[in-house]
Length: 187
Image 1 (cartoon, one colour):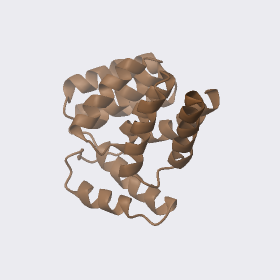
Image 2 (image 1 turned 135 degrees about the vertical axis):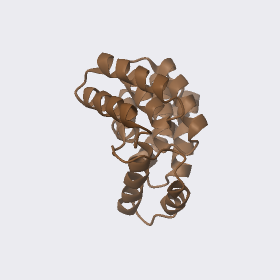
Image 3 (image 1 turned 90 degrees about the vertical axis):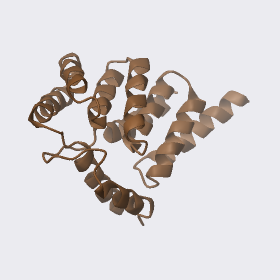
Image 4 (image 1 turned 30 degrees about the horizontal axis):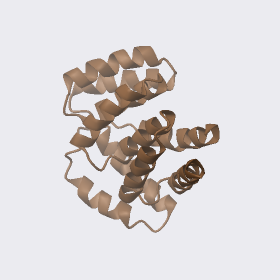
């Protein structure tokens, strides 16, 4: 169980944190459909990673200057490990831009890191309502489920993430480990 959480934590946290950007775009950007099609057909992990970076760059671009500032400041605090202050900024961000999926995703990440898994899942649900293809949020959902010992749910979330991003780093290992965990539980 501890090994499972550690492995899921590394790959999933990378997916949750994503990348950052400065131009205006979001989950409604028309370029995303083509990028997701390319992602599904990527030949290898390196090609997939390059496409993932383009998707993250679009997702993280804030809708206005205030949102950009809150995202940047919150992201810096998150990376510095100052989760309580990051959460305060992401609370302000989701209030300011409630239709900005990545605002909810960053807050979900922060809640996860604070050990508030149920709250993180609530925010992930909002992310997925705005962007059902958000592979980072799907992976994060699986991570929350693992922490709550809901391995069937975790496997389901990870399989959904893999369906969107078949070459996501660490996902094959995570899925295999969850399947082993579930098989061991059923013995």
